[in-house]
Length: 378
Figure 1 (cartoon, rainbow, N blue to C red):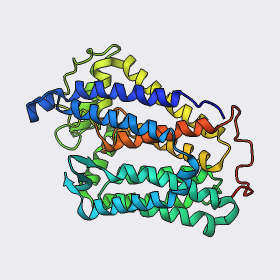
Figure 2 (cartoon, rainbow, N blue to C red):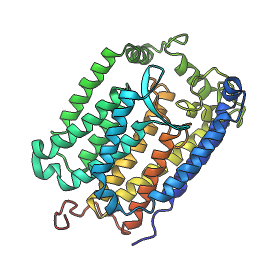
Figure 3 (spheres, rainbow, N blue to C red):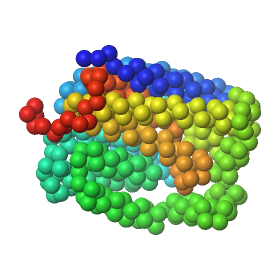
Figure 4 (cartoon, helix red, strand yellow):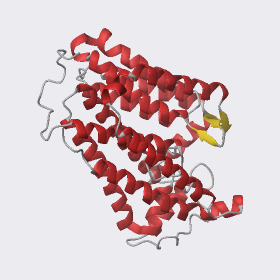
């Protein structure tokens, strides 16, 4: 047994610290305007960060065999929370995505996406698609992922549902599914996106605004394109060195959701190209170390767990950055570890703890060339 990859602890904690600083810088004006308290969002993010560190340390010490054994219970809890959010969740901006528990507001989507990775790792270890074929090995996990994504879509939350589908797609690929079979979820996903856009006019408006921007460079900066326009202004005005920490102007109520979905724009404005690049490097290093832990895993469950969690973190980061820079339609996805929020931060720090735990059990050499699907220990 090795000591474990300390970078899988250091990088998430460093990103969380950067997030706390940038949340304060980007939200002080909003807090003063809305709540007469410039520290309103900072105090809450500090509490969540402290709770998240405790969650990280807890998951970093979990016995992966117990995590594997509890996978059916974990997915059951995730499904129950998602169902409750749809049926009786707190509604805000036309979406039912939150559950209020005392003074805390939880977003079950974050619990559901972690539960989905744990369950898929458990399922695919026991039923490899490469061995069982399309109907017995490939279709059942596809139905499971589709059901969870459907519950998220009912909130409605198209972006999170799509990223959960992509995570499941990646895990099926890692488990050895045949390439021709992988065309099925791609087609199903395209149909689901088309139906969601057709049934939700505001989603269609955002997509149409993005399509016009890509095709002609035109942006409705007085309507649906307001956020993207202000985001691009923030990023472009940062230059090489930025305006200085706390010196940004777009957070003066010009850029909506500056402390959540568009926090990268404030980083680029205040810390410039150099600071924004440093943040991207930290995120890339975390994804690399997570994939490295997955590649060195000797156990199929640990391999799939680490691979799924790492790719999920990477997909969320990529989607958020694409939205902030105009490479994707505007959605409500946070930047992992950095954006303001409780449920997402706790889920991401829990994922980081599990990644570290996988690295503790790994050997020092790459294990990808070994046969992962031996059933002798099943």
